[in-house]
Length: 408
Image (cartoon, helix red, strand yellow):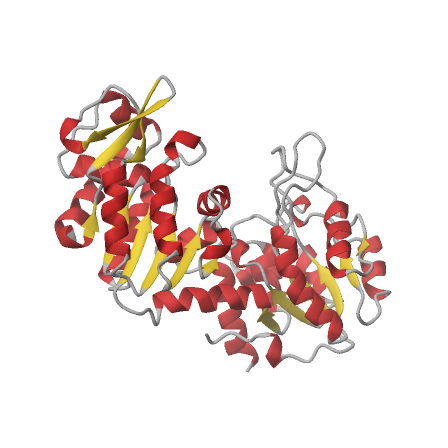
């Protein structure tokens, strides 16, 4: 992958800055961690560094300033990591000031230190180049105390933030085990997929959806794309189906309707490789009712693909030798509208072929229907996963690649 891994580095006695993604669901009232999956996953990289004699400094974030899940302190994350590692993890409520510097200098081999939320630093989220971020006060201060940088958070790699790209210009850099695992899983679809490769696209981000369709089909990564969610509705409109005024207004409200020209272009170019719903489920006073696309328009909002569509998609999936999933096919949060997603996802889980799923809502849907552990690989990433499947270059990955070119 042209990126150094932990196997390429010597860590004993060295101070290592690790950038994981500790941004976890937090109860807005109690400020208690509701799901520690990300911390548990990154613990693998941290545990290996400990065993190899590194002095580990963790730089992470929790939420965005001004939002309910934002926390200045990452002390609860340090405590949870300590429980997972079954060893003490230090915390200092400072980022790169004298208290942080002192705590870093005093670290012994095999010890772990968590610093204050990196997003308390105003320039962390500035959209700057790696070279510009490398000159920032925080990166300069922490780099002077460290020997190696490890980027382990694939789910933050789509951000050109100081803690993601800046250190790659100042320190020998590599990816951690989580990042390595994510990229290897993605390569099984994007570089060496077994054919036919079927992609299921749903969710609500139509702009990303149209970009993903174009990338997957133009590059022959996917043989077919099966659509649901709002991107499915948009392409139904493109195909000449009148969804009804409430649904058109909803697409306009969400800023999705403006992508109609691109959707038309895609449907013209890839008509035989894009599968659209043949029926939908609407909400009538809290009850699910299914309509064929021939029975549209409707004055009720569409919340799911219909059973016939789910069955048709399942038959296509049974022909696959590799499968990519991004987004649920309906409003899975509502029990009566998870049905389409459940039928399709169960078929994937039972297929026995390599299946890769990603995106925040995809993970939540898999958990809801009890299939999280039934897919071959489930990405921890949300935005980064979506950006990757659209063909966009991720700043964190590119920074690691250029770091290798510079250091070798």
